Length: 283
Ligand SMILES: *Cc1c(COP(=O)(O)O)cnc(C)c1O
Image 1 (cartoon, helix red, strand yellow):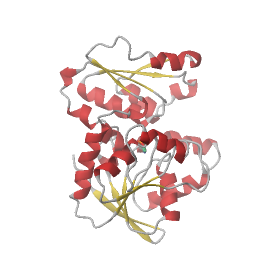
Image 2: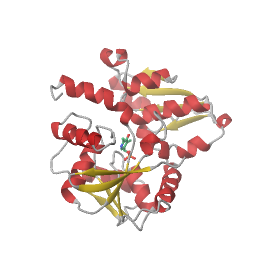
Image 3: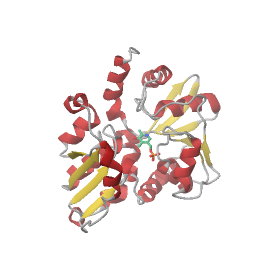
């Protein structure tokens, strides 16, 4: 599936956006790229996928959509969930449950040990995906994206995509050494991001980590993030409200060239974030 490229105008500058958000309502963005290899596998190779992590996670929803499509059972382990979230009829958790996800809550004090034992006694038809959709096979899917970018005919030298684990930005930079790849840490700081990346591969020189001017906590509402989100909406593209605002802010403040921004998806989580912005009185 070849995603299109849009052109947008922001603060008097033009940017291109690789629309990986349009691939599928639930299985899109970098989670589609990261799950690419699994998506190519024949359905009968597995009958069950196991994963774990947060209950607002975009990876959780993408895996749920993949399993529905493949007819694989999907069990997802999390720490206990609030009653409010359980009853919400919107957001990633709600949609993942509707796609057939089996959700299992593990008590906070047992959680870490429980996750560590998930890989014991696995049968060959069960596959585990680590938190955030971190699969070693992510490389292949990002090479496919790299080919699409190379063949797009666009004359830009810089790309940008936000980081959680850094898997996407790292493999993209490795697959496209002729481009500069900008990213910014959205979970933790640059030191943490570099550690995560180095565990996968040596960081190439063309990967540029932009440092936000202020420290932001992951997935918390910030007025300046909402402002950027709304500006981007007006320019014609909806981005996720957790990762994208931080990188756009850095790009506007710290770069001046024409950039192709790789949309990393996650728009399905915006309803939950908007309701949190409302609770905080920002909307
Ligand atoms: C998961 C996610 C990211 C982070 O991807 P990593 O490969 O973990 O760095 C960025 N943006 C969105 C919207 C995501 O869902």
